[in-house]
Image 1 (tube, rainbow over the protein chains, first blue to last red):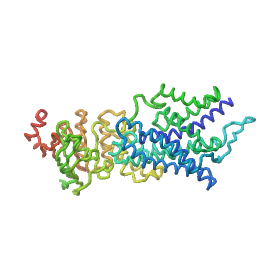
Image 2: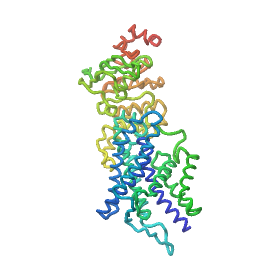
Image 3: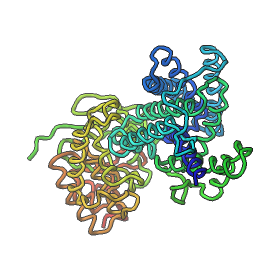
Image 4: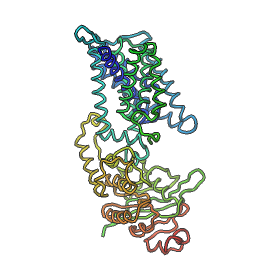
Amino acid sequence: MFEFINTLLIGITSGAIYSLMALALVLVWRSTRVVNFAQAGQALASTYFGFEAMKHIDNFWIALLIAMIGGAILAAFIEMVFMRLLLKHTSSGAIASVAPIIATLGLLEVIRALITLKWGGADVLIKAPLSNTGFSIGTHTLVFSPMKLAIIAVVVFLLSILSILFQKTNIGLSLRASAFSPELARLAGIRVDLVRTFGWALSGATGAVAGMLLVVNGNGSLSPASIEFSLLLISGFIAAVVGGLDSLLGTVIGGMILGLSTAFVLMYISDSLFFIAPFIILLLALIIRPQGILGKKGGRRA
Amino acid sequence: MFTKTQLLEAKDVNVTFGGLQALTNVNIAVNSHEVVGLIGPNGAGKTTLFNAICGIVTPDSGELSLHGSSSKWPATNQLASLGIARTLQGVGLFPDLTVRENVMIGAHKFARTGLISASLGLNFRDEQALEERTHIALERVYASGLADRIAGTLSYPDAKRVGIARALVSNPEILLLDEPAGGLGAHDIEWLNRLISDLSGEMSVLIVEHHMDVVMSVCDRIYVLNFGQVISQGTPEFVRNDPAVITAYLGADAQ
């Protein structure tokens, strides 16, 4: 029972971080139909922005905010300067479906290289603002710690804000309308280009939070070659696909399914499955519910 | 009964697609409070002309004036602020959004708040004003009971009503209706006729329509297009009796 609760809480914590990454990917997918591999690089760069901020003001939460702003600006820059040109010049033919993927993969490596130039290749540390020592119940000590609790709280807070933004505000409506049908949206007077940039900026900020939380959920170390960030990208993709690439709720459910099942597989089957478990879930999801966990049958939405 | 001033004029419009000349030296004008019809056989260029006015198609040449002064061909997203609204052939709604959201999108130009305050949720009053406009537009087409339905689940005639509501919600001076009667039954067509006549008290209407009863009963003036050229124009009676039109198009349908 004790072990079960422990595993559950760990799964929820990683699931929360995967959800954020998945959401960052879904935001870009929905606004521009681009599968953005560079998201891992953007999250990494944003986390370095946070690290830099921590050097000047020793407060993780302010650093988190700065990382979000930095991530948003970086993403908006990439969309406006790079993606717009790319999509314009590769809008037809066989290259149209491949170009964005190759380009964002290239961009990922460029960002990694720039980070190495600026901050070097060695590990740097971001100090967790709260204790990573687990809560105690009687004589038992959980792996679940105040830091992990805070991570879940931050994710819940952010998701609530995003959910209100999407469902209750005019800008959210513009985002959804532009994703469904850019032509119709333009006819209604929506500046679709601007809305797309905003979608990318939101995605950049969300990815920045995922990156910062990932680091303090682990041992606090950060490096340009970080395997954790590559895994975060893969987990984000898998969670997004399981969630159906479409809704906020689906994405969160996707992240949770991935986080929980990975945690339980590691605990109860074998920790040698660490790298394989997510892919097994991906394959199962694609075979059983290719339209996503909440998706309707009948293919992609317009 | 109204002083007529010219709201929209397109002069010498030429559009080609590849090698095909879709519009050749087309001239049309719409005056205030006027219902103007655009008819012609399939492929005559009616929708192309609409698309040129809406910035979806860029003309090779031609001039546009709005309110009597010459204007650039607008970008699609500027139409609403220029006082032009358009419905689309068929349904043209966002199928996954609710009816209320579909209509509210049309009121976009009234949303004054910027991205920042919108993201912080500071614009509740703004949202309320938009809701109010949306409600009024839906009442106008007798569809306020549908507000919470998902647009994709509506019947075809209901969806067309909602499409008109979305155009009306921006308070246009010129309403472009692209085949509003297409696919409607007699009862809905009667309703549509009445709505268009009512609307002409508040705005000008430019209408592309195949349904002759609708065109002949609501329009003040009609332009007839054939092979991308205006072959006749005038009152419904004039057009109906114009030999050029009868030969080209109306012959089979007229009587």
